[in-house]
Image 1: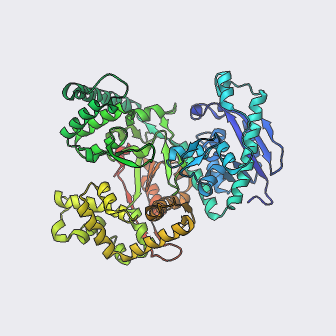
Image 2: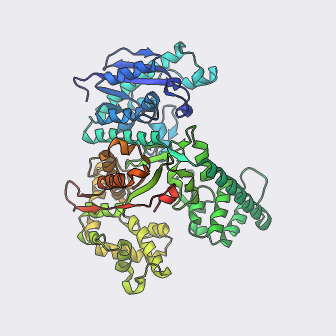
Image 3: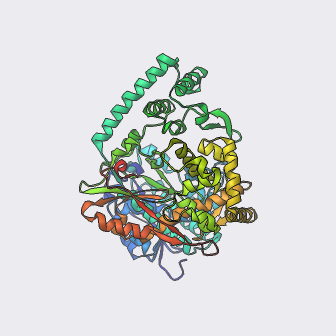
Amino acid sequence: MASGKRVLYWDIETHSSEFLWDLTPDDFFRLGGYAWGREGEVHITTSRQEMIDLIESADLIIGHNIHAFDLTALYGKDSSRPLELAREGRVWDTWTHASHVHPAPVSYVNRFGQRASGKKPEAAKKWFSLDEQAYQLGVEGKTDNLSRLAKEFGGYGNIPLDNEEYRSYLIGDVLATRHVALALQKIRRPAPYDWREQQKAAIAAQITRNGWRIDREKNLEVQRRNAEIREKNLKILEERYGMPTDGKAPLRTNEGKAAITQALADVGISLDDLPRTIDGATRKPTNRPSFGGQGIIDAAQGKGQEAEELAAAIAALGGIRPLSESAWKHMKNDGKVHPQIFYLQRSGRWSTQDPGLSTWTKKSPEKEDFIASPDDEVNREFDYSPADARMVAAYSGDVEFAKRFDPGKDAHMETAWDVWGKDFVGTDKHDPHTAYYRQVAKIATHGWGYKGSAKTLAEMAGADLDNMTQFVIGMNRKYKDVVRWQTEVINFAKKHGYVVNGWGRHMMVERNREFTQAPALFGQSGTLELVSDALLALPIDILRMCVMQQHDALMFSIPRLRIDEVTATIVEAMQQTWQPPSGGQPMFFPVEVGPIGQSWLGAEH
């Protein structure tokens, strides 16, 4: 990777990361450490400009989590230079490479000798830390405890720059970065796809730097209104249903569960609508409903305002922060949120946190808080339709399955007719009976494409098991090439322990979960790859307008005077006809363009 190049291994020490967006780069930066090549001595500087000069002089810079943090810390939130460096092929982030070639296992023993899990994205972040990667790769890691020093001196920004332990810690970081980089290269030498991943990570970091403006006054008004509604519903729970008010966890008491069950039933939410709790020992779902978490909010969607407000109040009892409060909590001095984007999933899909935008439901009124920035700009959303299912058609080569996406056809209605019959389903999608079966077909097709069982599809769609059994039989009978493709990728995963998508991404598959994971990884990763193709093709000035990526959708804050030109450029970059490099069939992936809006809600479609 670095033959004949001037390679710089580096790291920096800064104030606490919470001040990244509020301090100037000069104030935020404290120490820089660097070493040239595989054997170079580590040097330390207190000059941010010297670190920038060193980076600009290098052919290749290597560091850990430098896309998301260090480069932003050095150049500042208003700079696109980090993205330019990545596009020049001069940035190599060991965190990014590890997420592809050294992914977090479902279960492992960490450097403290404790059993840990990397199954969920948030847990996987610990696996990808520099010291954990060093331990897992069997190379020399960090030498000191920086958090202890910060506690001793009252904060990271108060540690004396000449403190020997502080400087020793930085030297250890630079050495650990070099050791981890070389160890990761031994797992697999960087291929073209790995360089693509580096550029994708740089774009994700640019979206974070862009940030998304919050309407302060509207947000505060929403918080005030939500607090009133929450208090009203909690009072109803207490007075009408006997909800206990003492203790810290009323949701865990029998009285609390009984009160909530009755209250939910009265607004049309049954226990069957709720997600199941997870057994702590087996980590498998139980038969017991879960009254906490996001699940109860999701269950209330579409059941009316009363149901949604009650669910929000109950979720608050379980510690779920209302979305408006989450946006306010993470808003910085520039009036924006700067959500962190991580590569933490096997499919390569991005995980967005602080705030977690994926938890916001469609048409949520709180999306009015997110507005175009500055005032002469507007928001507009672009997304694929429906990308995951089209991806299954492309990979499988199933001509009949692909016909559902012919111009003028409603793919979900076509599926409903195929399974239950046109006469039974009807043709008017505004008719409640027809709309129900169309929606069931829409949800179930997504799961069926990933080899979901009738039971799983029934749970996903909220449908009768007999209906879903009929659905699976009908789909298997009509779309034989999809079934053949599913079988092939499942068998490949069983033999090799991984699958490879059409762009070259290797994705690990858990043993004994190949049946559903293998097909699903193709669709999930494929949609992100399409989005990535578009982002990689867009010029930097338009990338600086992107404020959100969410699965198959992109949101931009666009100058009103450039709306037509920028819209055309984005659509041209996103729309494409794609065929797997081996087999399959070409599929056109069209783009839907949302309305022009001043807010997320107004631009959503």
